[in-house]
Image 1 (cartoon, one colour):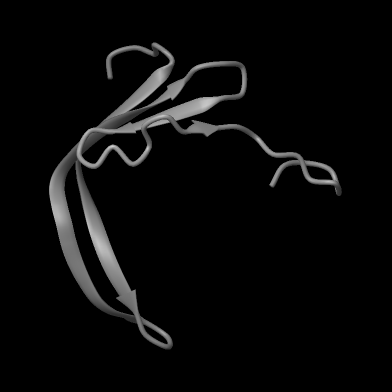
Image 2 (spheres, helix red, strand yellow; image 1 turned 30 degrees about the vertical axis):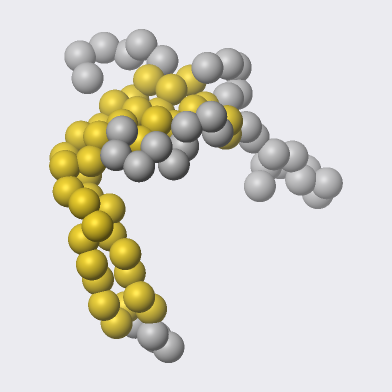
Length: 73
């Protein structure tokens, strides 16, 4: 990315399916390669995520949460 425009674009990513055993990963399967997408700042404290392969982030907003103990979660 040449300059900041309120978004972070990614490319050439892999999506893995990991199967865990009692202590370690037992198997690893690549579901796809060459993944692309972006994370965008859409408000003061709000992010969106767009995954170009599976569209799992479409319509989701990521906002900070407050803890009753103070600070964020």
